[in-house]
Image (cartoon, one colour):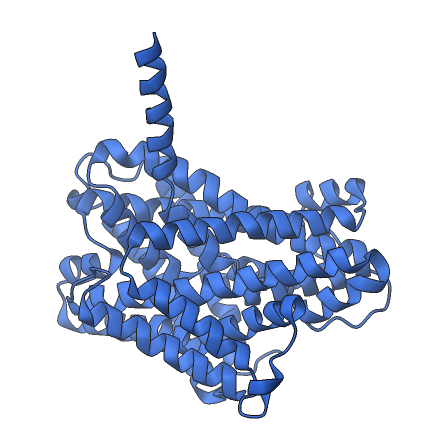
Length: 420
């Protein structure tokens, strides 16, 4: 009897070690951009847009499940599958160019925003660094970049997973506790969660909320990390368990941020431009504890994205170019290191590479529907053996494709100045 209990206990510990790739995805999409978008949505429209986050989590689950299943069954990342399945030279070149433009170039400049967001949180918790401020606009970016670089340089996938899982759990506690401190209106909360509505002027905010969750580079991150962690079709149950816990948890964090801003500032005529304003403005209303929790959550969101963005870029670039995706291989390390360094330079010196951001925005706008079509195609391919998409999965994938086209139109419209 005692032996059986020991065996059960060991089995439970083994199940805990199966979590990881899904948490990487949650850590990636809960970044400073998500915190800012969610804060503005809550401050401007209250609880009314919470349903959009529920929808975005469902769409993310559909795409990420296909990406992870593809990785496990083929034992290749999304980039490697693109190289293998697309035989037409022009088609292959086009999609590789989009991946380089959207994921690699895009993450290089967005990395500056990740580090800036983490720096805001660090300043809120620990204060400024006057001994470095005379040299740099944002000295915290250098320190946070070094921390992220050391963790990635270890090449230890399990260590990186543990750190990111810890950051996701910390973000959950920080943002949910902040939400509870602000004494939300639960009637309005559940109404916004369950009843779709779009207030006047909120259409672009709805699209932005979905766009911060349904992210192209996370598909590369998830497929490759799932292929590295799991190796047999029998592991698909563990894949889905990891996915269906981690992604909704990330969605819960976004919901908590929207609701915190709604509870504190909706209808109050308070000017909120970003997450830092939200954190500072909570002090007179709810005390220092709310501000510290919000700052801690922002720090965790920034540093988690500062790790996952270079990681996803390395998986994507090495995959489509045919290089090794081993975490300790030199092509892989040089890719994420270049993106990390560019982000540190942009953030620490306060640079604003507008033209590069515009280019990345255009490439991202085109890439998401293209990758969605490719996923639907390859998940119905004979490479998937007995694990092709079911009719229901194809139907859901088709609905997500329509959403991706909407997001694409929004991204391209913003890039070409069709609306602000």
